[in-house]
Length: 194
Image (tube, rainbow, N blue to C red):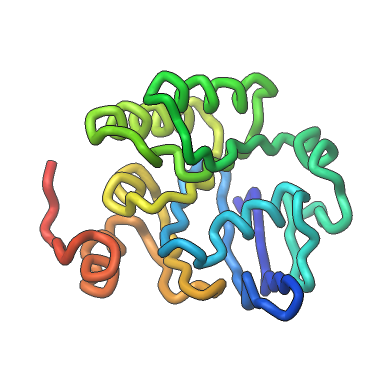
């Protein structure tokens, strides 16, 4: 069953199109990963979902309820929590604390913005295991991540965003093996490593 549904989202800042007809969904008890290059519109989409930006057009619903015009605090009150992209993390403990703070309210949907940014590979593994555990305990997760390898390993489904639009989507296991995704985001590697 769909928990979050985003349809034809468009966001324009002073003539600059940040999001251009983006649609995606998150089902109950699922991890959905959104990958794409810097400036693709990933964080802008998060900001629309959580009420920090007002979309130019499109529709965002949570369990069928339209979120248009709601303040961030009202959306949080409906069971949505998020972390913010932090360019100056002090390590894995700081990131785990950030995720822990977001979980205090017991959200049904957790939005994570680049949780692996600036972390050493071994710490990234720990953070991803934590996210998988949070999901296993019943929280749906929308994960924006540049580390496509790590994100697609724990996600059920994924969306690839470029220039504010979805260019590819599907089950994470299929996206991991897609040559277009491998070439652009996985360093050209299509074989699986355990």
